[in-house]
Image 1: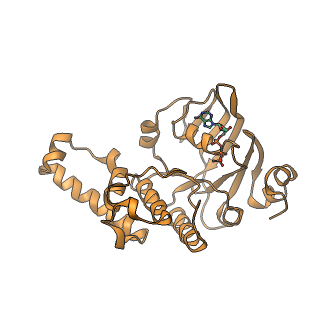
Image 2: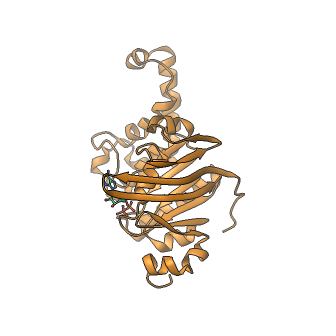
Image 3: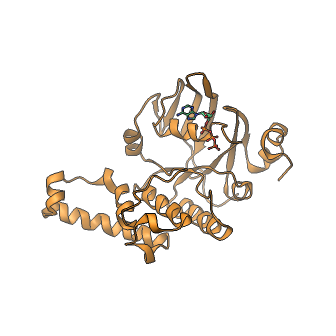
Length: 261
Ligand SMILES: Nc1ncnc2c1ncn2[C@@H]1O[C@H](COP(=O)(O)OP(=O)(O)OP(=O)(O)O)[C@@H](O)[C@H]1O
């Protein structure tokens, strides 16, 4: 797929292993992600895909291996430090505040950028007020981009699932990430909602240049929008390459695809 210039390696994952007690969730996983690309991670249930994203964004500490982001190598970093470096994440099981409005949920993605102290924020005076106005204006742009203006003030818990997924994406976008990790952004959506989500992902990638790492089960979507795909099975890497490469990889067909898609 030739849409935009794919740059150098921005995220390099080397020899990652992860164990939970007796469960070996990941074994010796290595792959890289290039700047501006859309990189998919696929594999059957329990293959280790979410665990891999959790290692990248600091939720889990790998038992072995290292991750290099923009030349900075770490084996352990907490989620806040990873977020400060420019990596944002959406979750398979939405991590939204159901009683809060769409706008306030997306505002939570601006927390890392808020500079004024808590007292000034609480009183909404001086620089804190100006700062809040600036952040709210930015959030309104995201709301326009994601076409959710009609639900700005609606509590998120009252929205259909597909729209909640869009708000979750908005919250991650509010962090202005260089790398966006998307954990099954289209799960549970109907065809129309999936088409909308695909369009947003492609636009984020093309217009903002955001690098995207995506876990997705819908093979049609993966094959359509990804530049490269890494395939996991039982915590091991069994395939890595262009959508065409993995579609024709015998190990991948046997373990996951069943028949050529
Ligand atoms: N916090 C945890 N504690 C114990 N085991 C875990 C934990 N998280 C994941 N696992 C185990 O690690 C393995 C990989 O799980 P993971 O959720 O990463 O797979 P997945 O490919 O994302 O699956 P799915 O497609 O179903 O979401 C599974 O055997 C799972 O049970």
